[in-house]
Length: 333
Image 1: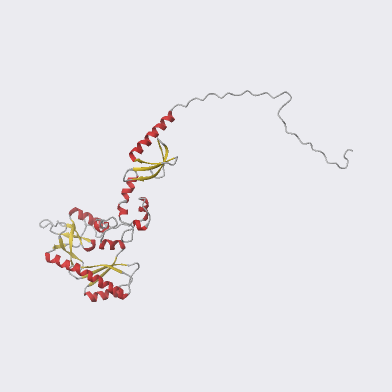
Image 2 (image 1 turned 135 degrees about the vertical axis):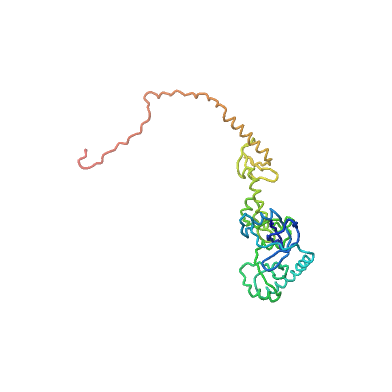
């Protein structure tokens, strides 16, 4: 039975291969193996095996699925790497720093607006891959010919984004830990500013941006936690009826389960979420009890007798203005 194996290379680059003989000689995690690539052979280390590797390969979607629903991996693991193979790969890693410096010199010579960030030799030295970042499209055909004549091998120039560059170079983030993209994050998903708004974070770019200059990757995979946690709290700005009266929700603390309230007189207080819910339920029960009580009958209002008007006096009538005729011919003397 052919097994699927995930193999990682330099810069957190990973690919999937088939291992035709898993039973007699099973592979283990972090084993160095020689794999079959498009043009020759390359060396990497095993990072996933068995069902986990199959699930990750299926989710990758770079290859089609077979008739049994399993990923149809085209390349295979040739053999385990020997000590000489590993030593040869380490020598290539040390040589890549000088390669990157030479590539930068040639880029400056050609006057190209691009920044070479990393270089990677294939284990058999049949291909050299140069990763670079650029703001716009770059015509590097002359550069490729120059590098091919210099290193006597096939040159592959690949443009990557700022996030991919940080993932390849690795480093320590502002939290003091390894970059999520380089450490454990399986794929780089888009991160928008709306995620920071939902988490009520500062929209200052210097506060929510990573070393790559883009929004922090943690905003993406932590977003679901913030959304689900806030469902347990009343919304900010909502007015609640408690035993102290009407209070407005100013802020919520999802990590300490606390709610900040402001009363009608302007005073503020911080209440535990559990205590606040019990307080609101008790205040609601008291309100329902007061509303269900029978209303108290009010005494009938006394009606004062009407005072009769004096004799000879009646309601005042509006005076009518007498209209006089105009004098003229035939008028009486």
